[in-house]
Length: 97
Image (cartoon, rainbow, N blue to C red; front, side):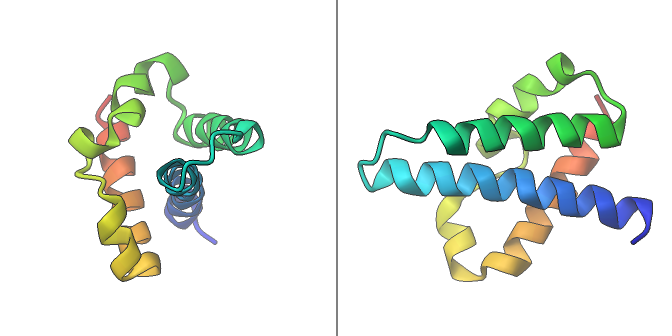
């Protein structure tokens, strides 16, 4: 796996963690501590892989809907393809930070 593929994989894992949290919230489940910890871990891995200060990414990562046009409903249509598309968008956005 080359460096870019690794970055895409980590970004996909990060976005997947957000997808799972938001999906559970829409179902009314609020006890998601373990999932939130997983999301935090993936965020840290992504920042480390991209060599970016975590604090500088917060605005982008906390507002994925605005920064990369993240839409859970779109993910439900073709999860793997859309997840990779979002991951690549996120990397491009974060590299510019």
